[in-house]
Length: 195
Image (tube, rainbow, N blue to C red; front, top):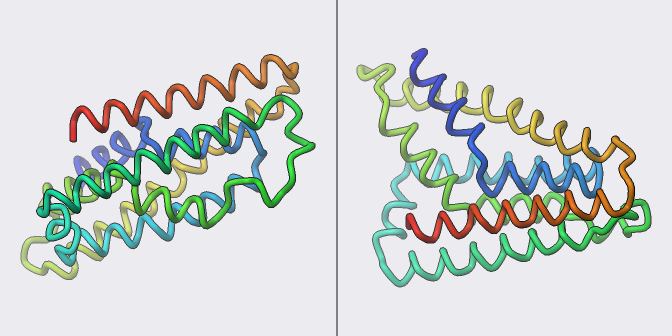
């Protein structure tokens, strides 16, 4: 079980679209906006878990046209979120609350996030914790994954909030926003190459 927990921590800590966007939202828009986005990520994370357990994700991803379509939609959406972070500018207090990426954005991102499916597939099928009772094993894995995943994502949001609270100059804030967006797009390029 220790190796499973360590794997969850390492897979969640590695930068992917969800954590990078969450940190970017914390840096660009603040903690409250990030919490709304995180709530959407959490809901989608658990929907993805259920899709992996039920085999629905494997069924859909086995169809080449569906796989290409989902990858394309995910790339476009993540690039849109990267644009939102980059365009937040240095005067974040002047942004309208309705323009912040919130719950819906987090939900959509993680439902389209290729890393979410890959990580969940690896964690749910790659480790045997309680082989005698599959339902118990999945329940235990889901509990461990959520108990690890949520605090680690709060860490990323806190990191973004920390950057936000440094009271950096407008120019420095813009540079951080651009950097977060470039890193996010780099992760997307890596996802496409490895897909």
